[in-house]
Image (cartoon, one colour):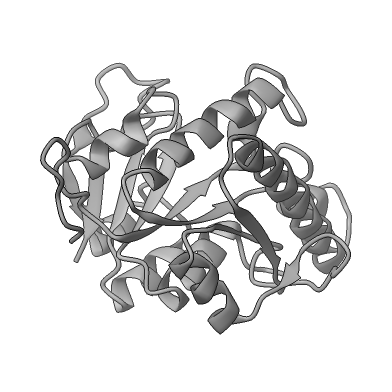
Length: 245
C-alpha cells in the first residue's frame, strides 16, 4: 500500500500493469489509430500515475494486424504472429507519443530488438525505469510466436513484481455471457481463475489465466470507456470484476 495524503486515500496498489487491446485505440473507426482516443487513454494513465502508482502497459495489435486472423487466411502462422508483434510496437509508440505530450516520461521496451525506435527488454533496466516513475510500455509480446499479448502481459507483470493486472475492456467486468448480445447476462463481482478456465469466460486466454493463477496475481477487469474508471478503482470506487485465487 502507498501512504495516503490528507485529501487522497492510498491507492490499492503500488505497481500495476494495464493491458488494453489494439482495438481500444481505434475509437469508432474500423481500423488503425484514432489519436483522440489514444490521448484519452493517455490521460487516464497520467491520472493514475499522479496518485504515485508505478505503471507498465501492454497493448495488443489487433487494430493493425492480428496474427491468428492472418493465419486463418492462409498465411504461415509464425510469420503472421511476427507481423502482429510489429503492430504492437506501432501502438506502443503512438501511446508513448501521447503520454510524453502530457509530460509523462515513457519508455517503449520491445521483446524484438529494434534499437533505433525503442529499447530492448532487459528486466533490471525496466524495473529501474518504473522506480524512476517512468511508464514502461512492453511491446512485441513475448518475442515468440504462438503467444498472445494476454500471456505477454501476465509474464511481464510477474517479472516486474506488479501487484495486479488491470484489463481494460468495453464492458465493466466479467459476465457469464456476452452482455452486448444477451441483456440477461450476469456480471461477476469476483471470480476465481479456475472458474474462468472451466466456464471459458472471456477474460484472457488460458495460458495467461494459468500463469496468473500459479503466481497468485489478481486480474481486475473494468471498462476502459468509463471516464476515470482506472483511477477510480485504485481509489476503491467503480465497477469491475476481480479475478483471484
